[in-house]
Image 1 (cartoon, rainbow, N blue to C red):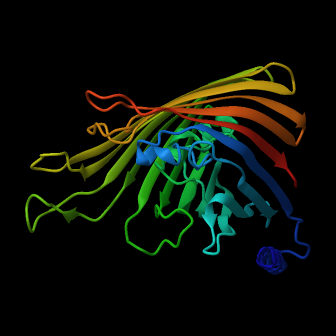
Image 2: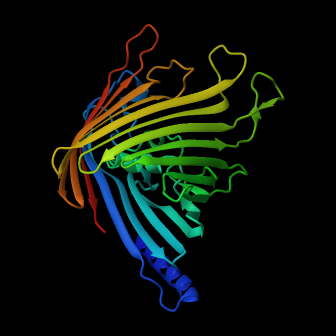
Length: 372
């Protein structure tokens, strides 16, 4: 806690120094924050398959059958500040009990966002430098609206991290806002230091809003990479670049219902060695996600989601293809507090000539609250 306070104090002092250099009276910044976590109980895991015995796909429910616990999955503390009419900054810290822990086992804190945005660098476009979201799934995550229950499929499956270090340009293609763009050059380094190699990830998104409530995105990225040794041809090297394509379509009627569909395909050149093969082949991943939520009343919503994920379309490994289902009822007990009983249900592909592993089933109560 003392370290966290020291970091926040540094941010405030540093921000004040920047303002002092440019204006007589710095504008006031704004803190915001939220938390989300669960009580969960693992109703089923397949002990016969080591990869499935202790966790399903979601890190929200670790442990074997009958494991029950409380977990604080995310804490955000954000400081936003407008340096001037043209320049704004964000500094955000995240704590995560599920995956980001110190060597002592205690909850770790890391920098989630740290960027400077130059608004309207030219008509209708903003330039952003620093640790920031890539164009991959910010739109679909906002449309999904239940990040407290689960990440969107591309985030969940690690197709691209939720943050990257780089430079982005985002804005309108036409003044009406029907067509928008977002491009970025990033290091594909997430929140880690971006000095390990010279290669970059280039990403672009087209965001279309043709009608009120209806939106769609088309996404593409390309990750450059060093050639790697060819195990079938000694002394030779082959390409190792990766590309991703994704499509999202969503429609929402405020305070009524929300539906969305998202699909992606990712290919890594020469990334897979099939059993008995004499040459490398591409590693191809595919995923599909569909969701819907319906407002029963102004404070009660029913939500459901289905994901299908294949991490290697050329492989028939046990449990390789996964079907992931989420269902719950969300109670908004306060404008800043929601409680959502929900169930996670995951099934797995059967091996050739065999039976499928048992499904992973977890019952949860998820808490989400805004504290700042």
